[in-house]
Structures are given as C-alpha cells and as structure tokens.
Amino acid sequence: MNRKVIAAVALAVWLCIVSIFMLLASRADLEIFFVLWLIGILVIVELADTRFSLPPYLRYVKYTIATGIVLFGGIVTLKVLEILAK
Image (tube, rainbow, N blue to C red; front, side):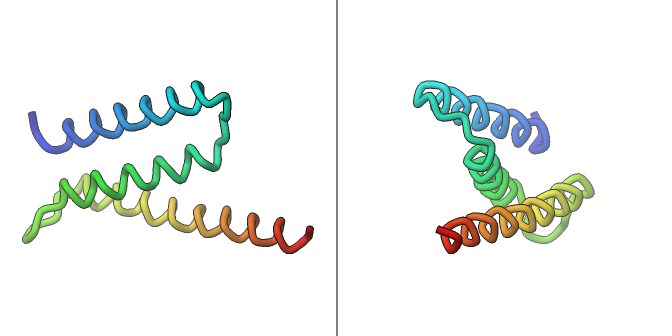
C-alpha cells in the first residue's frame, strides 16, 4: 500500500476511536471532535511527509490543515469571549 492509502486508513481509524470514546462518555461535542481531528491529521501528515519532495496530494492536505488551524483559532476566540462574558 502506498502512503496516501495508509494515511487515509489511519485517519479513519483515529476518527472512529475518537467517536467511540465520545459516545461512551455520553459527550458528543463537535468542537472537541474537530480539535482531535486536527491533531490526528497533523500527526499523520508529519509522519507521511517526505524530506526532499512534496507529493501533490500532500500539498492539498496542508491547505486543509491551514484552514483547520484558522477554524481552531476561531473556536479558541469564541471560548475566550465566552469565559470573559461570565
């Protein structure tokens, strides 16, 4: 199997594990799921990244990660504003 398939399978397994633990804890929170997804994809991309060349699919995944980091910043900002409003 090539790296792209292994990365997709690893991310799917990671998201299934996160979903199962969220269901067992009876706490289905989309923000926590998103943050754990972002952590998982960052780890997988770091492990799949090559040293001297960048495959085209990895470039697009990095754009997705950049968008995820911007959304993460928005979530953090909303949480800080929520805490300050109390």
